[in-house]
Each structure stands twice: as structure tokens, then as C-alpha cells.
Length: 353
Image 1 (cartoon, helix red, strand yellow):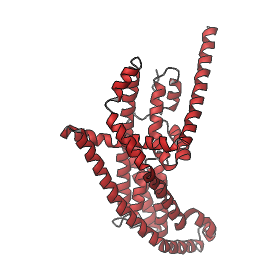
Image 2: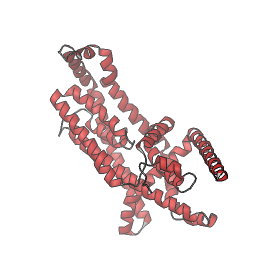
Image 3: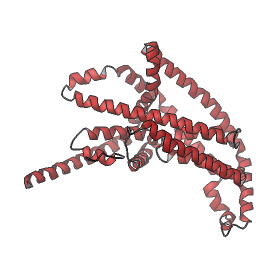
Image 4: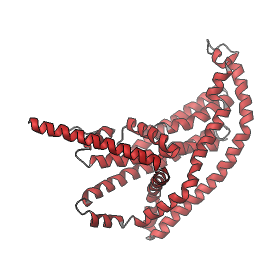
């Protein structure tokens, strides 16, 4: 019994040491091979985004070239049209910054002179308020986010090349792997199948909920609703940042809330805040979990750490694509008996035996 216990302890230590070494190597590779690994990761994520509509079209036309071509052309045209409208709205928002700044200073002085049970001291200090909620800071934040996302254009040629080869080899790679590693084919096939199912569920639910939440938010702050400057801009940011798990939607909501409290009357601003929070909770707490089900199965704490790590290494792009990568990692770890405890610790919940 003692010998078996010693063997188990040694095995656990060996596994832990191996995982630590692999983690360090992967982290160094992410840093030093960013120009290769980040476009590859983006191409894989795009593949899972275009795959569901491509399958629908393929079942109707029966031609892969037509199905993929339709999806890609539709996507390019959609992005082009949105970019035009986004540029116009961003330009208008920048032009409105002086007006927002004047309203901001007027509101600050108004509350600084009011009796707010001691809180007026905060508004009387212009430096504190400016550091937290000045229109200039909002403009800087928005342009920085768009600049980071616009950096994708610099690597899009590499992404397109990777995506093209992924599409061309999606039906041949399984045969080659079976010929090269016949003894491992069954396990690899299971991992690929479960990974595809989980990531497809994640991507479909995330795209659907991000688009739905962004659409509702855009309606709320558009001329139909509270008519805030940059309403379309903030709607697009909501869609993009919501791909960052846990904290993305929060960051997307903060700028329009601040502008709302600057430009609107207090009652209207509070009503808008309640509607935005309600919109976020409905999609984040009810719709998205029901769409993705239990296929993702990653602990929120692990997701948060993943977002922070990938954001530190790859910026906004890393924060967006980190979640699909950690889903694959957990499924791979779960297939090996020695690494299964790590996968269980990464899971959101486990079934008790």
C-alpha cells in the first residue's frame, strides 16, 4: 500500500512539473511567436463563426465553394457597410466632444453648489471628476479600443491565408492523422468532436447574444430612445467587447452611462441606466446560458484569469480569443487520466459520483 501511495505521489508530482514546464513554454511561445500564433488563433475563431451558416447554405446548394463564398462575401459586405456608418458616427461623436465637455462642466458646477449631504465636495474638485468621467477620457478610451481592433487589419492577410488552408484541409486532416497515428485516432477524434461542439456552441451563443445585446443597447441610446452622441459607435463597441467574457459588456456600458448622466436629466439618466443593466442581465444571465447550455463548462474565475493573461500578451484580440482556447485546453486535459484533476478544477461544475 505504501509503495502504491509513493508511486501515486511521484506520478502527481511528475504531472504537475510537466504541466508547469508546458505552461511556461506556451507562454513564451505566445510572446515570441505572436505574429504567427495570434493570426492562427483568429483564423480558427473565424472558422467556427462562419461554419454554422456555411453548413446551412451547403445543405441547400450542395456545393462547398458556393456555401463558403456566399458566407465570406456576405461577411465582407456587412463589415464594409458597418465600417462606413461607424466612421461617420465616430466623426460626429468627436465633433460633439466640445458640446459634451460644456455640459459636463455645467453639471459639475451645478452639483458642486447643491446640498448633497457632503458629496458636493467631490464635484467641487474638478480634477477628481475629470479623471473619472471626463468626455476627453471617454474619447481616448473609445479611440484606443477601435485602434486596437483596427490593428487586426494589419494581420488580416495572414489570417486569411490560415483560414483558407483550414477550410481546404478540414476534410483531409482526419484521414492523414488516422494514417500517421492509428492508435491515437479514436481519442483525438473524440477531442476534436467535443471541442468543435463546445466551441461552436460558445461562438453561436456569443455572436447571437452580443448582437442582440448591442442591438437593444443601440436602440436605447439612439434617437429613438435617449439620443446620445455616438450611439451607433457604442453599439458596435458593445458587440465587440461582449466577446470578452465577464468584463467586456461592463466596459462597453460604462461610456454611454457616463455620457447619459452628463447630457440627460437625472431621472432620464437613471431610467437609461436601469434599461441598460436590464438588457445586460437578460442576455448575460438568461439567454446566453440557455443557448450555450453546459457545453462550455469553464469556471468564471478561470475565464477571468484567461482574459487577463491573454489580454496582457495579445491585447484586445487575446481577450476575445482566450475563451475558445481555454475550452479546448480543458477538453484535452480531461482526456488524460493524469491531467483530468486539472480539467475538473477548471470546470464550472462537476457531477458527483
